[in-house]
Image 1: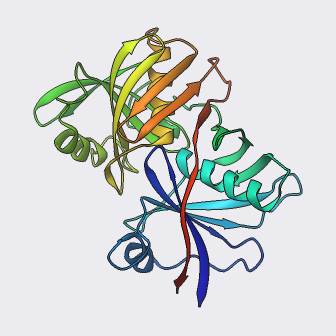
Image 2 (image 1 turned 135 degrees about the vertical axis):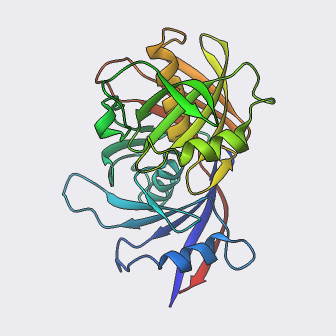
Image 3 (image 1 turned 180 degrees about the horizontal axis):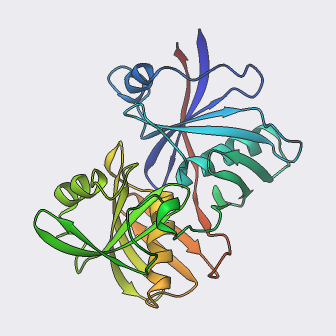
Length: 276
């Protein structure tokens, strides 16, 4: 069965979008996703966004998110911007959408110059809902990794995140600590791990170890988590430029139960078909 796809990028994150709103075909098996995610046997991607019909009249579409290792995850900020771009291209001049995600409904707005803003929902800090093993909620926690204690912030942006402050992005031990924290026993569903260096109150540098992927050029929910963590600690302003290896994102959060807005590019790389 041949299925058309768009290969896109958001801040360097490689995204494949498959539009199944009409046929509503099921996604491939985990093994099939791994083969498609490998550029040697498929289009190659960090995340696959499988778009289906909405279940409510208020939404334009629903989507599911798969990492290239075949695992299904709750959210992908860079991926949902690509989905919104695809919908805007199909439904011009409509530029604003409500979408159904595994983490709940979100809003998306397609702006000029291939920029897209998405409301990622309110961050979750209650440990049981992240999920994270802790006796009570706190702004930061001490996490034991390899015989050493690391101070980290932990929250969910629809998926679990652990954020660590570092003095230098270049010197951060992303591979070793990222893998160890992703699989830490205090994260029952594993975690994305952000290594954040604060330049000033409105600018941070960030590297992200993404669960099921490894270090990635960009992570939209990781950018949101890092900015929110810094704001909760009183280190950052309401709007933050996040510089990642793949590009720049802007995160806005007004605090408390307000949604986090993520703005960045969504650009088409190529189009093709995959044979399932």
